[in-house]
Length: 253
Image (cartoon, rainbow, N blue to C red; front, side):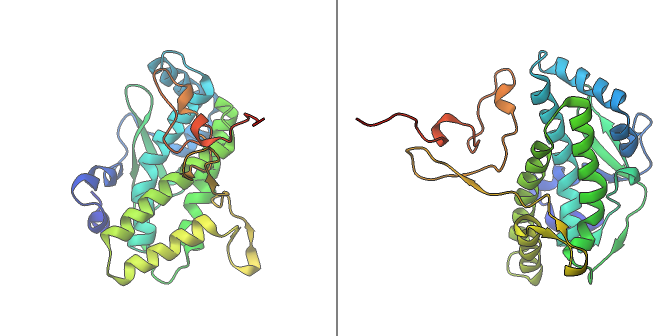
C-alpha cells in the first residue's frame, strides 16, 4: 500500500488501497491512455470480457468493465486527493493498467507519487483525474462499446460518494473529516466546475433520484449501471429502473 493511504484503509478496506501501486509497470501492463485511445484494442478487451458473461448484452458488459475500472481506480485516488490532500498522478497517460484473466481491470501502476497540495482547492486536486482520465474513459467506452457516457459518470459518482463517506468516517472527529465532506459536496453537488473565472459544467453533478413506487421513498442511483441485463443478475437495490421504484401506471376507478 502507498504509505500516505494507510490512515484511510484499515482492516476490511485495506485491499481497496492496493489497486493503485507505486511500482514499475508489470510486464503485461499497458499505458491506460494507450488502451483508451486504441478503439480496436479496447473493443477486443470488451469482447474477451463478454465471454466471461456468456455473451451478454454488449452494453451491459461494457458497463461491468467500466465499473471494475472505476472501483480499481477511484478509492486510492480519491482518498489521496481528499484525505491526504495529495495529488497522485491521475492522468491516464501517467498510469499503467493490468487486466485479469477475464480482461477486467485489476490494478494500476504509477511511477511517481505526485505531490502534496494542501493549499489547492478541490478543482485543482481532482482536475487530472476528472478531465484527463474519467472523461477519456467515458468517451472511449462510448466509441468501443456503445456505452452511454452517463453510465460511466453515474458509476464515478456512485463510487466517489462511497469512498469519500468512508474517508469521512475513518477520520471522524478531526479537521480532515470536515474537509473531506466539503470536497464531497463540492464535487457531487456543485453544477459548475472551477472558480468563477474558469467555470464549466460539472460532469459529476448528476440529479439525485428518489423512488416513485408505493413503498416508502428510497434514494436511488443517479444512473442505471445495466447490471440487470447480465446473466443471473438482478436489479440493484437502488436501481432507478427497478419496478418497485417506479410509479405504478395502474388507474383507480
